[in-house]
Image 1: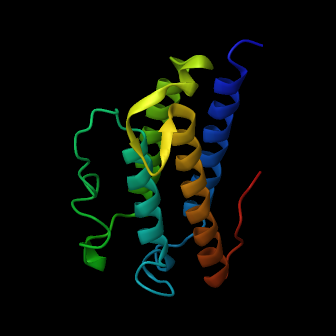
Image 2 (image 1 turned 30 degrees about the horizontal axis):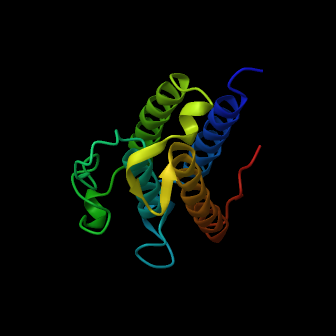
Length: 159
């Protein structure tokens, strides 16, 4: 199989976005802004996940990323009444997913081993960067799942 690693990575991203969107959609509009702490609310967790994925999916140009650009500000800056609806975040998730999948479709397995011009978070290779993005996303997916259970819904979408 040619470029089996790229294909595996692509499938992992597809599955991660699938379960992330499923988790987001579990929340009611009433639940969306309520949580254990300000950071541990569904809206803030979802914003954080997607803002980071947008950052990870950005081109490696060395240009500064504008955190919160998709929301009119960072999750730490916005008042609750300015937080985005979950439907907006689902659309944003799909946009980022398509961008990442398009990037991966142009790579070979050998491309994944290339050292990135702007290493970040301790990852120097292209595959290391992607693995970190997935690890970070799934960490916060778990927090969303716990918040879903806290709100009385099922949690832990995985299939």
